[in-house]
Length: 262
Picture 1 (cartoon, rainbow, N blue to C red):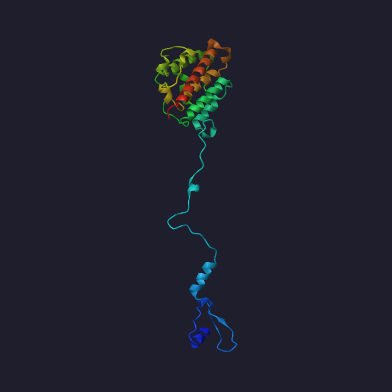
Picture 2: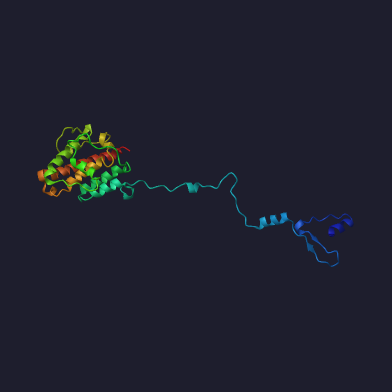
């Protein structure tokens, strides 16, 4: 039987009891001079004590998940750079590597412009065959190139170079927009045939993306320009090649300024 001071206090005149917490309750031995015995805590008290003494953890507010704003905001991607070869498609890499064998500045300018123009369409394969309607004038070497899957350049025989140049000009003239006023012209297009293209519609040329479009024009200029007789200028073809390079440069600059067709 637990008899403490509180019992004695009642007997002595109603003294106020001390309120003792359960975990602090003590009992004295019924024998004089006996040791004090602490009352062990109950199971619930142990759980509460352990919970309060354990490391405190912060739980997210119920109904409000932790903020993921930082995780969801991805770093801004750099703008697409068409001159970065890692973004080139296989067909474009194949063609570019073939064409990049002429070291003159004018040719390197054409390759850079062509790369930037094709980059507007992310180097898409395309589905337009440029100037296909004029099969009689479209250079036959283009068909040969397609038949061998464009894996290597075509070599134009010296005796065929004059005809090749004539076919190129007739084909190139045919695909030009009406506002250039060159229809039916047989021969090189020169500076007088290059009006200000600002705000103009490039017609079929604006759709000529991919391996069967402007790439075919670059291929023809490459086969012509790398010919071993070019430096000797047979039939004045060296000068004509320079005019062709200048005219294709003019068209590429116009397409680039117009944004081409996505």
